[in-house]
Image 1 (cartoon, rainbow, N blue to C red):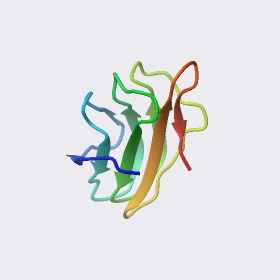
Image 2: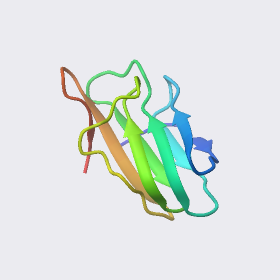
Image 3: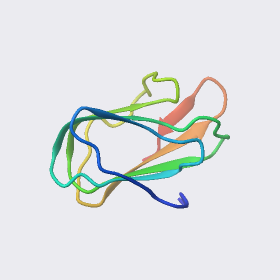
Image 4: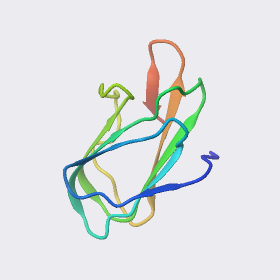
Length: 101
C-alpha cells in the first residue's frame, strides 16, 4: 500500500506517540529494543486509508490504539526490526481500524 510521506519519531520506552491528522506513515527510529510503546492512530481518516508503522528495532510490548485511545481488535502486540512494517487500514462503520496482514 502507498502510505505517503514518512514521519520519524525516536521515542523512549514507555512513550506514547499520537499520530497527526495528516500522518499516514510513521518510522520508529529506536536505536535499541524498546520494552513498551503506545501508538495512537491519526484522526479524521476515510474508509480504505492505510497507515504504515515501521520499526528500526523490536518493540516488546506494542499497543496500537484508535484516535481516542481505544484498543484495536487483533492489533499486533509486539513489533520486529530492523525494517519490519505493520499496516493498519480504516474500515467504515463500527469496524474502524483493522490490522491489515
